Image (cartoon, rainbow, N blue to C red; front, side):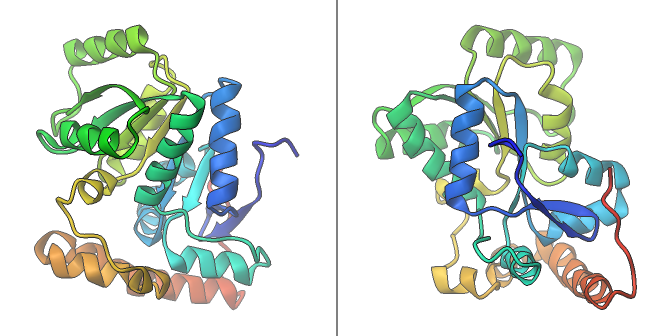
Length: 259
């Protein structure tokens, strides 16, 4: 097994990488230094349940360089399968740790996503935190798919800048579909879909206290902030996830990898 081939835990057909932050950062460093193109999905219960509704989306997750355990339920399941060192690789934490590493090693960044003005606000925040970090550009896409002219402009801009890492701050599954489609089109080494990290790291959305995260209750904290937008995601997805996982663990149903 090569340094970039890491074991995965089959959770309802999605191969979640059996990693922790240390091994995630090592993978990012090696891939960037060797110019090994790939995309990284930061995936929890929501992403896994989306894959139950859309097999193609599940295949996108399984084709990633890494599909990180973004929520504690995925971590607990990984440890139950014997991966005792598996731990949460949460989008905002991954972004900060990769930026700290990039400041030391000279990797360049590009920010793609967020609402109007958020990417610029995030760039300013990251530059204050990491003064030597090289952020070569940012772009706020429209809420619809890019048209031909916009796609050509983005392709030309990335070709001129050649960032090592392109951070994608869209919602799931939109960001994963974008990365899978555009990775072959853009002159970039890694694309990392971090969802709400753009809003959390700029203070647009409050992050949960550490104890809430470790208890697996961050979904409740998010729901309390955006109940009208997120109630379906959590109040429907979470019980369904528990039901399907119970069937898988009991051996009553087989969830084959979505390859």
